[in-house]
Image 1 (tube, rainbow, N blue to C red):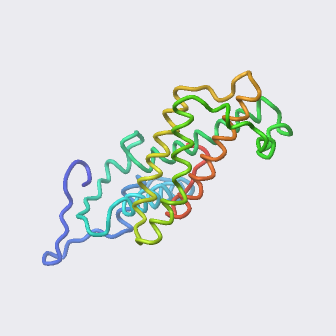
Image 2 (cartoon, rainbow, N blue to C red; image 1 turned 135 degrees about the vertical axis):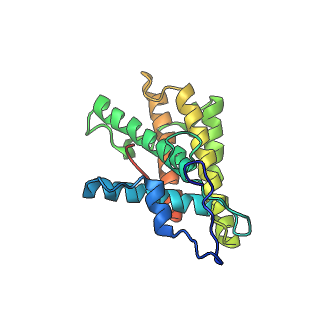
Length: 205
């Protein structure tokens, strides 16, 4: 699908679409772009194509929606996941500004108390994080990377729900550190899972 129209592929007619075409379309590559803009657009396209392709079971029919790949909305799964990772990174940047670069070091969170995480959306995030090792094992055993793509969407959804409901940088230091420790785990798992799929874990969007 491109521009709301189905692009037909036919061996008999000799019409086809290359992966390069999909990457350029999905990244919004234009002739008037600078070299840096073009490289960024190509990376967006590669990420979109990879994520969309591995999000489907190998034995199912697949329609690649270029318009969806270009959309910067929650409906676009790769944008949704990458935006979640960028949001987590933004929280840590805010913490560094607020607490000072020397204080805002990840290893200072190792002693944070997870028992303070009692809100429903915090618990949901913890449970989803705990599922990752099994999801990864299943994907490897079945040679089915779509399990990881589905998991990332679920994790991103749980994170966005938490982020919209709870404030991370609260005044109470123990709770702040507990929530930052939770988000550190979210960031690490997202980074690892995206790396398995060969998709960029963006720090800013």
